Length: 134
Length: 142
Image 1 (cartoon, each protein chain N blue to C red):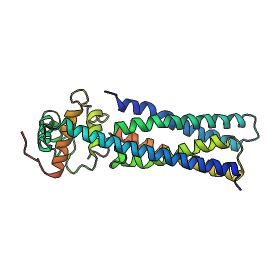
Image 2: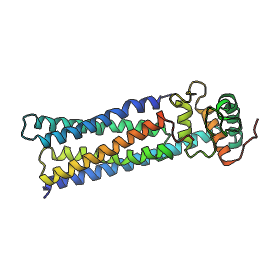
Image 3: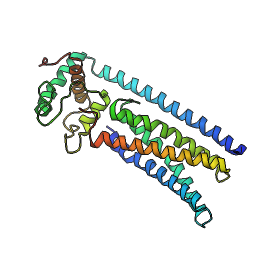
Image 4: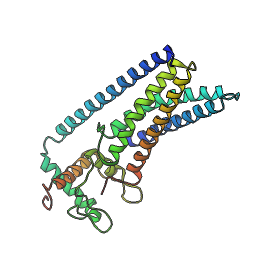
């Protein structure tokens, strides 16, 4: 049998863990909303389609060589259509690169430029801008 | 701009290593409990677990900042998170339990604790594996 001290410890452990997890999820949610609002405000002059069009410009300059003009894949790199990853994950890959496969673009594109590329990739995944844009 | 990717990489390995080492120390101390160093190992595992729990807060904060608040995600990021959150919750709970109980454990209490330590170690190892996959293999990017 467990002692009363162990049971008290278990209660304290569960309560602390639940409180910390709830606080983490709440803080994470608030941060995500805040970042979303910040991005919206920062891009106010640019509508979603303009942002994606700007992103297409960056894409053609830096990514199309490997991933194809319409992001449908090339000889050396896969298609970026039907991506099953979040925008945050796309940002992470663009900024960090993939070891031995894809260079990091963190020095070339800042957060806003990367957001434009992500917006473009999201738009082609919805079939909105495919083949269009500047 | 804060380099969250580098900070996350720097902060995650301490809790992972400390939790795994703490679990190992616990199992060795239980297996060889009559040897003189068994008590010392229990102490090492206690402090290792406590520092891992505190260190995991830094890893979690830098991870949330890195993903811009995306607490689940898809693909390997999603798998990483599916293991991270139970590992984090268990790690905190186990550290608090050890802090309260110290060495005054019953046989049943010790068994439950060791099973949960193994579970937390498995979760943390899996979370680390999928975290590595995100960076090294680029999976999730078709």
